Image 1 (cartoon, rainbow, N blue to C red):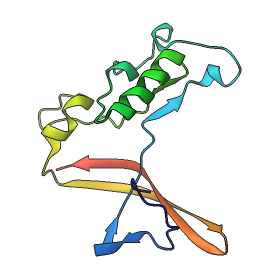
Image 2 (image 1 turned 90 degrees about the vertical axis):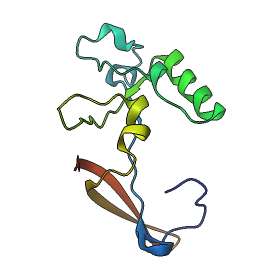
Image 3 (image 1 turned 135 degrees about the horizontal axis):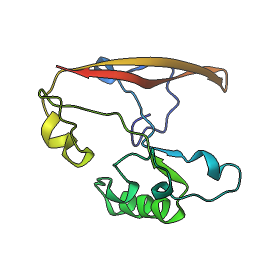
Image 4 (image 1 turned 180 degrees about the vertical axis):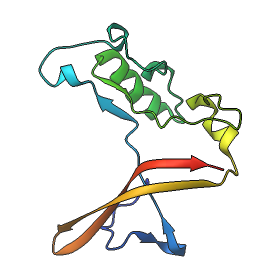
Amino acid sequence: MGRGDTAIRTSLLYPGGQIRVRHKLFEEIENTRKGLKGKMTTNTNASKWKICDWPSTSDAAKHARDNLADAGTHKPCILHTYDETDNEIAPADYASTLKGALVKVVISVSRWIISNQWVFGADIQSRSIY
């Protein structure tokens, strides 16, 4: 759901025919679920993008991001994005580089019944930038 949406959605469509999708920015590091605290720097397969470097647009988001970085329990869940010459675009550059781009997004739709109403969610599976 988008920011500020408090009403239960009974359709994937929002006013104006928009569909909103979501992507989990950070995911729990597997070994922290078993009670082992591991830092990403010890993982040789760790992404080059770290939580502490992740762009944030508000003080509240920066604070929450820093708490996750300090805890060492989460890592970025990257949707790798490349420019027309196959160079990876840094997350900090997404907004300026991709503004106005045409993007094809493949989603999975989930639905639940809450209080006798269908509630829908859409998760990004993949995307292509044209």
